[in-house]
Image (cartoon, rainbow, N blue to C red; front, side, top):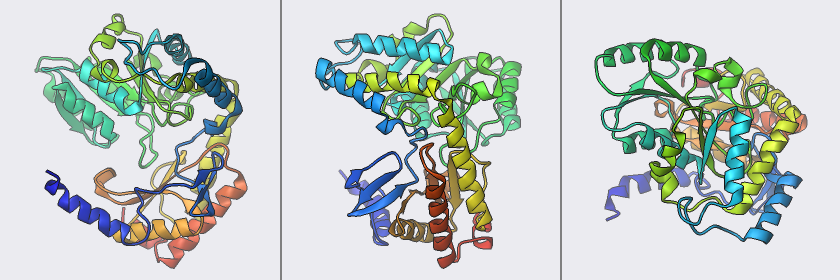
Length: 402
């Protein structure tokens, strides 16, 4: 039964043979939002998506602990059975208020939010138009939807326009899906242009703000807020596992009849609901995110500092400064070697390999936190620069990889 995974096991073994297994790193302990202990040594966390550093926020921790003490460790049921507590409904109302939307529903993971949303919204005879660099959860939700799936070139509104014109004579609803910040390269969608195309075609628009919630916009609502087009976005998907420091996901909208999705989104209906502790910590995290805009400003400065430092060191960087900075690698072997040596130098980053990366090209992916100090970022830049120099992967070598 497992023989079909022979090639995959061989690839995994080849990657692990160069040192540690990059997909099986187990920290001895996590000390804070920025540091952990691995194999008895302190390492700097530069690959966690802990954008606002709220995993160790004292108020979030205390609310989670109190929820465990008063409501137990889990619900043991789905939302349509025994899995809806008062906190779930309160979180949905709080989230809707923060997003400026009439309605919101909470899923147990961000992955399930995309699965549930896309599979329920688009049915047989409808059309889903996906950015080619969409997250796996978007592609998987599209497969479950039974809709016709059309990919358009990454961040290319003109290609989207051409494909919608080609579909204009076909019946069915057209739903465009874009992301606020794309998780591999850290680039943002050209949302104003996509909105213009949406208007022309009479289509619908869903934006996944997973990596942009708490990061972009004056209030932290994401790219749609930053671009001033929230009224043109019909559905917002997001996750609690980035800026909000926990786990879970959501779908929000202003459309009438939204609650019908609670009866049709299978990823919502047939899985256990979030435990009370997570509901409590996320609810508090929204409060913290609103009350402390300085965290967003610190995150912006840290992203710029990392990007500028690596650029000055000679690395060829693609995306504009954001909390995500990725270094293109010329091949898998050197990407694995770079990742291992960087970890030996005390910096944990993400090794990103195809097919999960744009074009299947290997990347060394880093993400900053608002709680990283300038000294920590400078230390990380120095470690990355020394590793890149030792491997001959600064400047022209990486430029050729793009």
